[in-house]
Image 1 (cartoon, one colour):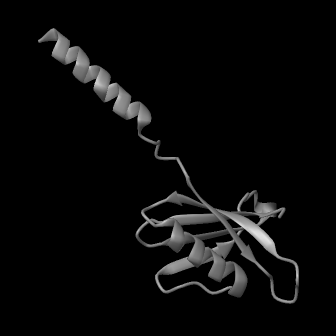
Image 2: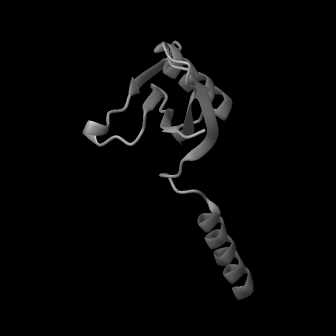
Amino acid sequence: MRLLLVATVLLSAAVLALTPSTGATVGCGRISITPYGSNRQLAYAVRIAAGRVSCTTARRVMRTFMAKSVFPRGWFCVRGHASQGQKWAASCGTAAGADVKAYGPMRL
């Protein structure tokens, strides 16, 4: 009985240790865009900061916003400002709690 209790406690501790924290972000790779009026391509790292959204959707929403300054229905996007201490270049979110951020531009 005691052995079963010890095994259960150890298993629970292992599961808690492997579960990502609530502040964990998910890296979704890079997007590349060519800003209007430029022939220079810029790359941005895309990360999911919160919510349930696929990396494909995160990259699609962020690429559309960064290239065309529009966002899909159900999303709201803004650009970051270094003067306000924001390290991200753009952030998009939904009312359901999804939060996607783009960092960069990065060197290609």
